[in-house]
Image (tube, rainbow, N blue to C red; front, side, top):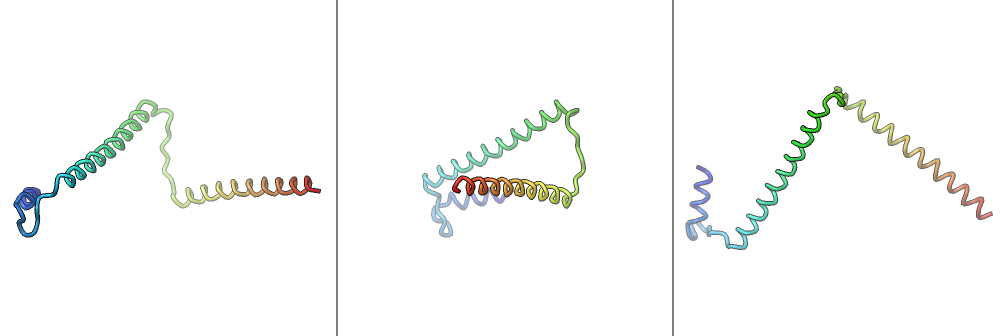
Length: 102
């Protein structure tokens, strides 16, 4: 019922200060709607594809309950370790550059 009222309101010439949208506005809306539908369908298609892969290879997957705090701690530890390796590599590089300059 709400959609019908909106259509009637838009179709009525200058009813309550509203007029029917111009053609370029409607074309823009149609393109945007098409883009949105296309995006949703691509996401849905990807979800369906993942579901199919999971179902076909279910024996290769293991579902585990995770604890968010532990997950964050693990990722933080991994990042810290990675950054420490980068720092050590940069120090070795700086030392080698200094030796080369001498």
